[in-house]
Length: 240
Image (cartoon, rainbow, N blue to C red):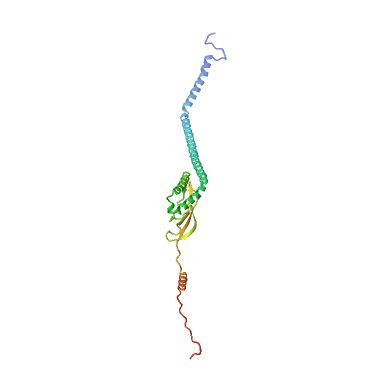
């Protein structure tokens, strides 16, 4: 049988390949044309991813900033707490030392009153200088512990936070309500009052009124012994 002879009912092989290959190529070309015509979403997807990453980065940056601010506030609060604790500890120690030296204040009061009434004839004795040295050493011990006198001088305005009034004195040498007499000095430590200063306040003398003046004049007249004017005596008997 020759190559060109064909078996009845059977199509040649070359024709089958040609017929099968033609539709496949057309399908491939159609798919390629369809892909080339479709819009490319690669760039759009990249922009969206970049935008999403930028939003995420901004959120993380804000969170990091907030964490940093919280840490700074916490560090500042802890620093303030340490400083306040140290101040309170130092103040507590000073108060304890002041309470331990509180009986010395009474001794200083006695020394001050003794030196105020010391006769001039005894000022030059050696034992007086020794007593004065003891007074000086006690005051230095108070200064070392931060114990200082409260400001209280004659003529100074009255301060209820540092002074305690125990009476009034009529005088015109100081304004009304100012310190006229200092009875006992006060002391404080680290801004805390140990005891107030005992003072007497000045009060303006009151002028006598008219009634008191008349009473004083009548009393003066009676004491001087001046006789009063005699009363006129009417004669007795029938009228003429």
